[in-house]
Image 1 (cartoon, rainbow, N blue to C red):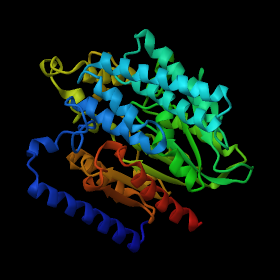
Image 2: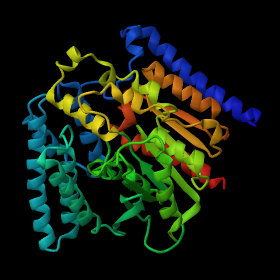
Image 3: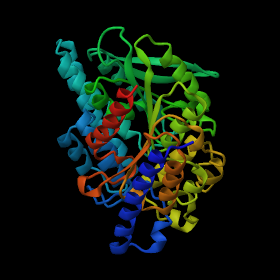
Length: 431
């Protein structure tokens, strides 16, 4: 049963959120109809491209990773300047060619024994190969080749950290779930640990560049993994499913078996679809001691029903750029639905839910101001906030005027690090 103090804190948090929305709604030029749409690839402002989906990926996945060594700004803008707006093939070509040039520099430094230079160059080369995969379909011969290069170079760069970034594989059903573990410091001492989980379009390497350095700087072990549907796993037929908690259990099994993981301070953070996968796992697994979401996805079915990618007509789809079309087809592939029938993403998510009332641990909800304008996103945050029972539960709306508005807030990872780890430290320090 919730205490009076818990209810008061939650009510105040929700009143702040409601006040924000009312203030925005009173001045926004957007129509009421736009509030019914949950376009997860919308941006608060334009970064470089006219094509909205390409601009989202460039501003968030690409430029957002610069703070954590994923890209160099000069390299990124050089590649962007040679890409035909909205054209998938030119996007894939420019990032792949850049990856090759940066890889050559890294290999040269490694051969000469300059390990820091080699690590930094090889990290970026790996991530440029990752970026080249956006909008690339799995039947493209380059898809698996460049996916393998991503993993190969990330392994090579990860070994040059101190402590090294360890690659691991967790047996799962007839395959394995690949992941990474980066110790906070050398030695066997049990240490607070963050498990980071992505969503419908992510590779495990994305999550390293999202927040691993922020975790490491604060003395946290960092772990991440590809779940079914993520990374290269759909090539093996491992697509998204509604019981992701089953796969999450074997990942937690791996972590709690490690001597260097503090079992009382194991947290999980999920963004995008991970905002469902993480709380769903915590609902079934008490070994997870705190959870964070960006944002909470209590029920994926109605959320997908408001997404333009799944609801636009064939006539509207015919006007899509090749880049956007490739992104949507890739998401369909990951969910195991026909790539030319994105409307089936809605039914594929029936039963993809979690019950906040069944999660006893502290919970943090983060949501960008722009994403929060969607009425469906608001509705789901309210359900989660009202029903998480732990008094340490919080919701934070990150502001557009600090460049922290978009889906997953990938464009301001330092701010997310501050919000997440300040809250986690407070929660764990009370233990």
